[in-house]
Image (cartoon, rainbow, N blue to C red; front, side, top):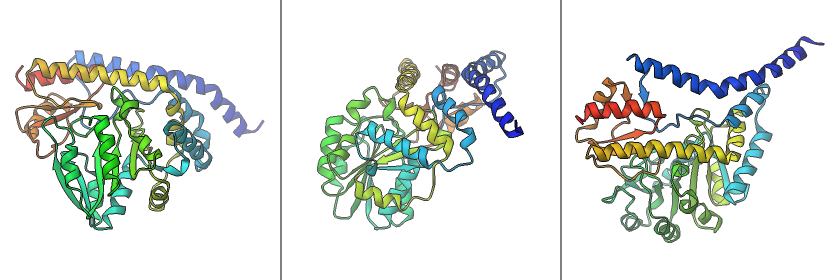
Length: 374
């Protein structure tokens, strides 16, 4: 028996122990943190600033990564092809309609750059997510900002009115980041059907898996019907894989071919196999959605009890009016060991707070009561 075969057998024998450790590690970690909190000595801040999913990836995704460790020396071409097939089946489209990215951020960057180079205008909401906009502006494009409506939702009629012969892309983030609001699904679909006759519509559905009615709200069917629309998704949010960087866009096949040719990144083996396992784990998705909703509902209840205005959220975060400048609120919350998000002009007295674990949300609630004087 060779040394290498012995090592391999030993590795396989210990895999079960490692997997068991993975299953209990989060509970051990939370328990230890809880004890530290009770003693008044939390070791690190509660990070509620980046809309990450603190519940992490599914156990099936973790197991897939461990099983694939021996293949880490290989490029993940066969594994990527398998992931593409699963995505196509989920979205009801051809693999030719799919562009994989290093997170959905790469899709945003490439599309933004591609249309920015045409020196066109990008119609977008304010405040909203800026990655596509910044990529377009850096390439020579121009942002055309449209304020949100009174409910802090995309103002679709106002956005449609801004579309001209100069428009290259209309960008809709649904649910919107930072407000968490969604657009009425019927109105959004009619908007896309009309506007996509004139220009590309890009719908960023990064947070839609967290919403109450994903199936009823997604517009991916419009791609399959032949409309000029891109839908972006990510494994960073509901799948709990922000550090693995896997996302994708669904779009017309001709545009997909153009966008693929502009890609600069490549997916890694661990991200691909984890995404492949996670996309099939529907029970995990439903369970995680329930946990996020519970945290979101609890934060909404606190806002109501404190008389604080908030936007109706459907993502894994809540956008609330603090009554003080966000910089001041950030500093005061940081002093209580809780980190909240950056400013989102022009709403500089509003704060975006991500949903954390129950323990993290308890710390957040206590800090908010102290900082806001309730």
